[in-house]
Amino acid sequence: MRLRYVHGQYEYLQNHEKAITEPEKRGYMLNDAFKNNNPIHVELGCGKGKFLRETALKNPQVNFFGFEKSVKVAYRCAKCVIENDPDNYFVVYSNGDILTDVFEPKSIERIYLNFSDPWPKPSHYKRRLTHKNFLDVYRKVLKDGGEIHMKTDNDDLFEYSLQELEADNWEIVMCTRDLHNSPYAEDNVMTEYEQRFTEQGKKINKLVARLK
Image 1 (tube, rainbow, N blue to C red):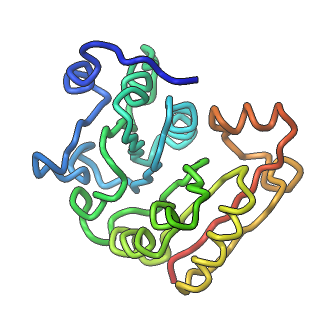
Image 2: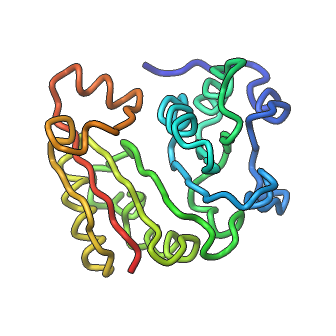
């Protein structure tokens, strides 16, 4: 469903206590946002924030940043904030390709890629978040031994991602093509898309790749 534009949504994000808007334009380093040294996890494409909030709630000693490039979606994510929301996450309105501009080198422990746009046309493969260009960015900001956690219902994107990661010398430490019928289902936190796809009977792919 196409989201409608809401007047003032950018200004709403600018003034929201749980939102950070375009930090790269202000030279703001996100490592300083929480005023602590807790591990940092980043979700690229956080949608309306279901996964972000539930994962933050389950892991109070981790700092979470959910990046969302659509102002319409980021606005709705911020609007979903409730009184007892966990205090260890921020919604970041910006593109995920600016990670090196807003994080110190080797400072992120984990990156989540949940149901990213598959960009099915070969001419658009460079936009895929597991393309070599993006993997080079992740290498710069992930700690040694840092991980990418990826979930998708798109089989073509999943196979492409495995090939890109293996060719780029990442270690695949976990891989399943049917997450919800695997031993990894117990601790899984579902996204909005995942919940919908699972109800439709679609199988969910998941991998974990570690930076050697």
